[in-house]
Image (tube, rainbow, N blue to C red; front, side, top):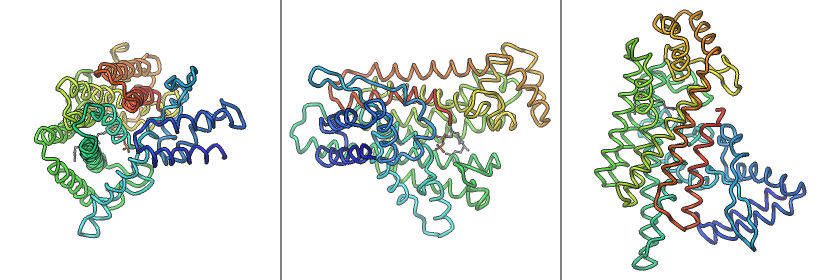
Length: 429
Ligand code: GRG
């Protein structure tokens, strides 16, 4: 408890004195001192630090889905008195304060004139049901990873004004992305006739399909207004394309032929449209706003694309396994809805006879059992995980290929983006 308070004080002090994104000695020294003086010794303090930073910095969702991965995330980053201090990098905590500012702004951005629409639009922006906030976290970290403030400025004051303005604009991309994401969730739940989302009743279940569709449209319109305010036609075009991709991916899923459903190429293309395009193009928008070169913008896009694909592949594995490694522990929602994902596609490569079952569909629950049996005998889950790992490695490689930068904050954010690639593939939720 003492350690939690000391760490919390150190973080607040650091932010007050050095600003949000500084990698001040103050925090590192406090962390080092506290680790050494913690009653349970260094090991105990480090685990306290993980837990405490989650609590102190308010990452409610983070601990529940990504926590296991953090134990393996260690970096030797800070050289002090000829000894290395190991800092635990928690990508979510690095931007936690900014995420709460963003959450408040989002709540303000979705206020509507008509009371019913107002409560529908704010439904998934309320405290406690904001989801994992995976996309804004990535985008804020990408903003810091491509920081331009270390370039030689004409004057310190102008530099500060420019970087603050840039950060505001990049935060705006994170807000737009989150509004598009939530709009797509609302529409998706109507199409799937879902009754729950983020642990509560889905909006269509609570307020009906019509209001849920209208609330999604309303969020998209607010996202458009915010996008227009950036006055950057390339960025507008990128995010408009994302909306087209979401609709295309959803339609591909709804209208697929039997051949399409059995094709890995079709599955990857649909996954890009439905999941990866949003984060890939938003990462690119962050780079473009920062005035980065086409090469850097492409690396930012590559990171988002591969991270998004890895994220969805693991999502598709978890649909079968849930938090445990055993089959049938997940919600089995995809297969019950006739949606064929990577684990089944890989199982089908080993057992071509599974194709007949897939072609028959899964309205008959016994076909779900048969498919699960084949999946259990195959390496389907393992190969889907391996494919996710390949995409995670490609995402990490994109960050490693960015032009060198000696700024500590830039380096820290890049490491956090790489850590996220591990978190995505080890997540259980
Ligand atoms: C209205 C833009 C718009 C699109 C309509 C319905 C539709 C077309 C597209 C559906 C796209 C969709 C919902 C894809 C699933 C993406 C996905 C991986 C959702 C889950 O993301 P998480 O786990 O959710 O990050 P949280 O709740 O944590 O935010």
